[in-house]
Image (cartoon, rainbow, N blue to C red; front, side, top):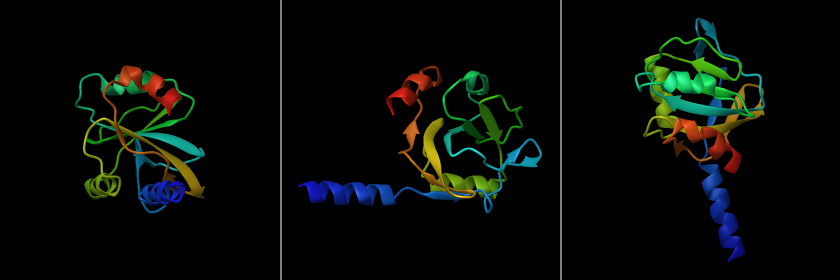
Length: 139
């Protein structure tokens, strides 16, 4: 039973994806994004959802946030949130790679090597941005 649980856990963890920021170009305003932190919270959202960007900008969590906008709207970064955008091809590859089906969605990434990061959690639908800090504490 323990071996089966361990095998299942390893299988599920192997489904987690990698993202190499040297190969995938994301932009902060007009500059190419270069990651510096060991871990990030990735939030995939739509800037057309009322109030989403303002709520993301005001969040104050213990990990930096990479907020990736489906509609690629340019947004000024805050102290804790980096707003990213990319071309259509890159956005589609990102959505497919991480199997994102809803907006806003959230997951964690952790540095594996240099600019290579590995997904460190399941993709979760973020039903309520106001409750994000409580969800982060329970993960």
